[in-house]
Image (cartoon, rainbow, N blue to C red; front, side, top):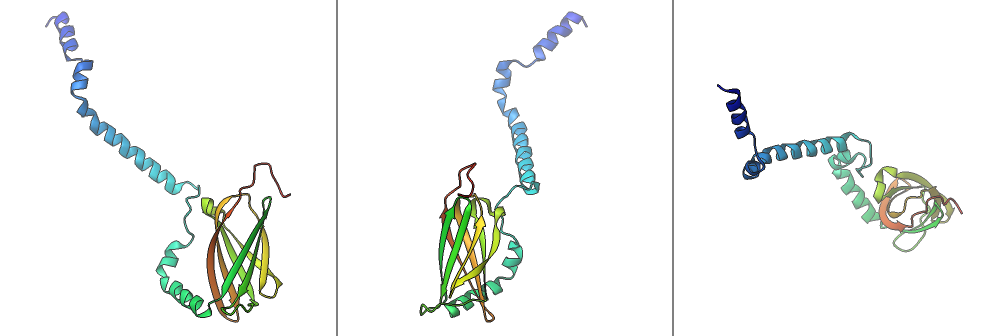
Amino acid sequence: MNPRDMEHDDAAQAPTGRSLAANRWMFVPVALLGLTVTVATVTVTSAVVGHPLGAEPRYDSKAADFGAELEQRAENERLRWVVTPEIGSHGSQRTLAVRIEDKHAARIDADRVRVECIPVVNAEARLAIDLRRSGPGEFEATFDSAIGGQWEFRIAVERGGHCYTDAFRRFLAPVAKGASRE
């Protein structure tokens, strides 16, 4: 075979823009495979990287022991205590004060009041604080956090072997960068 004919045959077999455009569907499996690899990489990275995803701690054990949650709800309904919160901010220092009363508005002097403070935007930054008694049925504490936005507060009030739980959400103003306690 003549070398000139071989060059001519190679040129005839080389894909042109027109033939690639006509057979564009041959790229679909390659694109789908690339998309699959990308999604798998993002999924695995999200699962193993330590950035906050807002997962509830011990969620699986809480779900498995849902009977205890139902018992606590029944205890709350039986006690019918009322928790009235007040939240103040002074820079990044937040003040949480609660008043605890029974269904007849009589103050409850609890043995212990514990609050779990959870910023919804970054649930990994949650913190638990014990409130100190400031008066009959009144408790307060301070905590530092510059995180603004919606917060969830979960309160546990213990008195004489009984435990009352409640939760509420409030919006806290964000603290400007560079600002400190004023």
